[in-house]
Image (cartoon, rainbow, N blue to C red; front, top):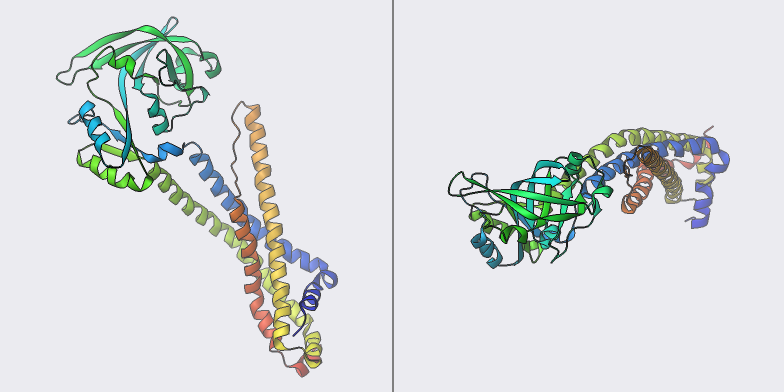
Length: 398
C-alpha cells in the first residue's frame, strides 16, 4: 500500500505534466458549480427579501382573530374575556376600527382610524418606517401609514411632530344609523408605518372608549404561551365562528414555497453541472489512457490494484473539490457584485438597499462537500478500470 504522501504526490502530478488541461477541467466544473450557487443564492435572496418584512418574536406567538364581514357575531368585551380565559392564552389585545376624517392644517380626507393598546403593536409585528410607536400612557400621539402622507404631500421625516385631528363615524349594530363623533383634541404624529396601499392611522384605544361605547372590535390579537399551543387555541376560537389567521403559518408556507423555488433553480444549474461532470469524466478517461504504461510498471514493481484505484480517486476528488472552490468563488463573487450594482443604482434613485443574492455558510459548505463527492463518483469508473488492467498488457501499451 502506497503512503499517503506518495499518493498525493502522484495525484497532483497532473498540475505539472498537463497544467492547461487540468485547470480547464477544473474551470469547467467551476462554471457548473457557479451556476448552482448563483441560482440557489437568488432563491435565498428572494426568500430573505420577503421574510425580512415580517417581524418575528411575539408576533409569531399570536393569533389574529377577525370579526366576520357578515357581523352575525362580533368581537366584543364578552368575547375578549372568553379569549383571555382559554387555556394557554397569555394575553389579548383588541383593535377597534372606524371610518374617520383626518385633518391636517387646511386639508381633510377620509381614512380608517384604528384604536389600539400598545401591546397590539408587538403582537401584530407592527414597526415604523420613521419615528416611533406610541407607548403605554401616551394619549396625545398618533401613527400614520405612509399612504396618508401622500394626501398631505409630505415626506415621512417632515410629518413627525405635526398635529392632526379626527372625526369618527361610529355605526350602530341595531340599525343603520351612523353617529358622527369629533375627537376634540389634536394628536402629534409620532411615527409612520410603511404601507403605500392603505389609508389608516393608529391612536390609543382609550380615546375611543372614553368618548363612546365601542359597538364591536374589528380584530383581536390572542397571544399564546408557546408555539405548540397555536393550533389548539385556534381550533377553540374557530368553533365560535370567528376568522383566525396566524403569522407563523404564513411564514411556514412561504418557506415551503421558497424551498421549491430553490430546488427548481438548483435543477436548472444542475444541467450545467452535468455537462461539466461529463468533461471531467472525459479528462480522467484520457488520463487513464495516457498513463496505462505507467500503471503497468507500478503494478510490476509491487503496486496493488487498490493503490492504483486510490491514486485515481484522489486525483478526481481533488479536481472536483478545486472545481467546487472555483465555482463558489465565481458564484458568490458574481452575486455580491450584482448586489453592489443594484444597491448603487437604488441609492442614486432614492431607493433602499437590498440583497438580491444571499449565500448562507451552510449552503456553501454543502456545495464544497458535494463537489468533492461529484469528483469521487466521476472517478469511480476510470479508477476501477485502472486497477483491473493486466500489468503485462499495460506495459506493452503505447
